[in-house]
Image (cartoon, rainbow, N blue to C red; front, side, top):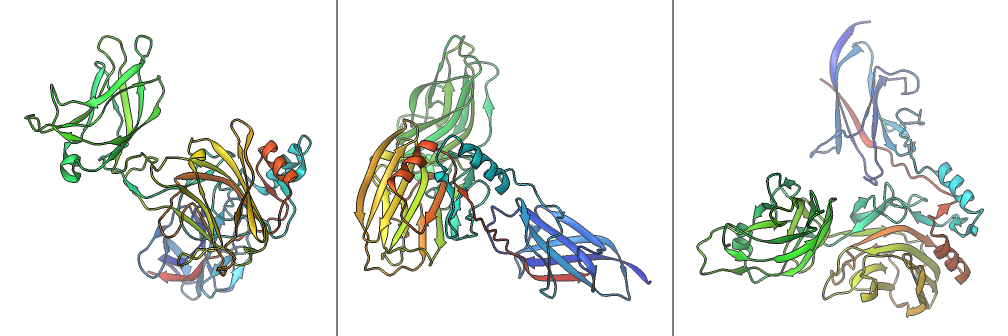
Length: 475
């Protein structure tokens, strides 16, 4: 053996549901070996460096002992919650999963099954979906269905405040104009504090547009006073007037929203600043604390972002869906913010160049921030809608009908939370979505409402995308 020490660079490509990906197993073996038999280097990388060149990912091994008389190859494997892809090598050959660095999934199938059957002791088994073609989207850790249907385009965020564990947020784009908005300012000396000077923002964007302000606010002590004034202050005056409101606070952070705001320039003032200030009344111990401040050029506030957020969208290409025939779609829906002039898009089937088979946009009834359970079912000519208020436990709509636009060809596209022509945007959370290639009856719909349980797919199929274009480079 002619031992040498070398650095090795691994490069590869990977495409798939980025939310589901936990990392990669990476191994170097002799030419005739594989990761299960013998390796000279092996690692699990939870966040390998992405590159801007021909490869999506790269990893560097340092000081690897090699035999100069032998050839070596690289193996890479994608790791998902509870399961992994095949290993793939530099020649495109594969090896089966060896269980290395598999990450346990707390929401794994077996546990779901056990919970489901336990629930079935007390409820109907309607939430146990016994169909080979059903697609269920839990949105707990990823966007892929239980049958492996992945989105073709998405700009969403995974949230932990779903109706059942996780959910996805599909929201309109926005920009937070506040610099360093996560900064926490806590008053420790008295009941007054200034957070940020808004004058440079208003100088830049003007006074003719409508703004919204949202922030997290709490008090150190509300025993003597439980309200805090939110206003503009730069001494005894301010360059701009903007907000002057008092809110009831607690000793834990709460999110406050102030909509439809418009600054006004105090032309007679000599002040050059306009600080967002908070006042809890001197001598009361009502010291303000503020963080996560967001200022948007919108008349209504959207959810917090540190910088900018792209327009949200979630698209699945599902050509097998019987769009012009019988089907059922169900999901849980919670509105996050209210657009003052437009309805909010929920779902659109087959949209392309303003042609679509069917779409639904919410009315004013569902903009109150509660979780609603929507069920839509088609008989091939009309779509019937059921809506259940999960908080008050009452049926709001029962079989409301809309007509399918059957003249449009189905292109396989199902869009969640937006219409592609930008006319409607959701600003909502979605949870526990299901696509079924048949109509369910009203008894089943009623059981879904009353159980208020996650769906369980009795025939799940994993979709573990393997890496491609694996390249080993010795340095």
